[in-house]
Image (cartoon, rainbow, N blue to C red; front, side, top):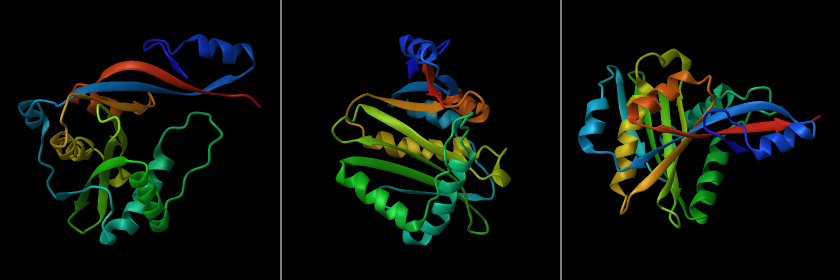
Length: 208
C-alpha cells in the first residue's frame, strides 16, 4: 500500500489495521528525474581497483548466465523481507531465459551492468528498465553486491555506467523509481548521493 512519505500511513493502512491485518514490511520509494547531467554523473564516478565492468541489454550472455543466476538468487535471499511469510526465489539459467523472453514479448526492456573480479567471478550487478509504451516511467530493479565484495563502492560503480546506458536511449525526460527497505541503509545512501528524493512509503500487511 502506498502511504505518506514521512509516516507510511494512508487510508489503506487504516483499513488494513481495522480488519486485523498487521504491518509486516515497509519500503521507501525514491525517485529521480532523468537525464542527469553528464558532469553530475562524472563527479560520482570512482575507480574500483581489481574489477572490470560489462553491460548487456535484453539477453544475459551465455558465458555469464550461470553466475548471474547465482547472483539473482543471492539478491532475493539478501533483500530485507521484514516479517512477511515469503519464500526465497531460486533462479536458474532456464528461468532467466524464460523471464527475458517474456519481458521482450511484453514490450519491456532492461539494461544490466555487472562487476567482475580478477578471477573472473561476478561480484555485483544492477538492472534498470521500463516499458516501451511508457518510456517516461523507468525502474531501478535489483542492485546486489556479494557480501565478500562489499565496502568497496561497487554499488555506485555498477549504477553509473548503467545510468549512462539507460539515458542514451532517452528521447524525453523521465522519472526513475526505486524501492528499498529502510534498513537497507547502504543502498539508500547510494541513491541519496545520486540525487534520488523520497516519494512515499509502501507497506506490506498480512493477516493469519
